[in-house]
Length: 200
Image: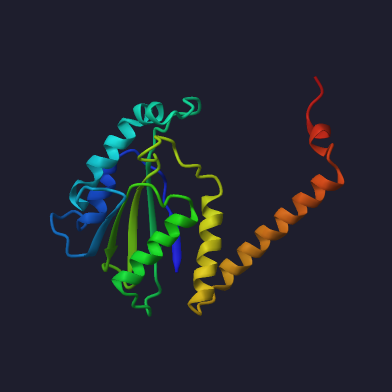
């Protein structure tokens, strides 16, 4: 299983069209199935609902009593893919359940999402177009450490399904070592940060 977060973008229409259609064509032969999540709209109209949520983010915040401070979200579109090995043949239900679990792992399970599974490569994969603006509160999801959380979720998924990806295990082990070293350093020398600051 390879999860991947792509660069965040601005166009829901462009991202949704990409996952629902074949490249440079009006067909959708590469699409195995689609599913809208936290959307009443059909997959074809998902982009409209997601764009409306982003457009109305200030109104949603006011209605929910959310603090209006903070940076404005100019790039609300998050594109994520989950790819299985070429030898794997996950069912549509398994792919959907896995995609929902991945959303939960990075705290986006309540957000609007369009899923589309593709068969145009030698491995099955599912695309997720996610609105980083919450549909009820108008808040932007905190995306810090999302790649790390996704990697740890993937390691747990692989362990559960008897898959061992040495590089992911090694990467997560190194992350744990760095985190432990930083914690030790902050406990041993709490004034270290002050000492690093330039004199005024």
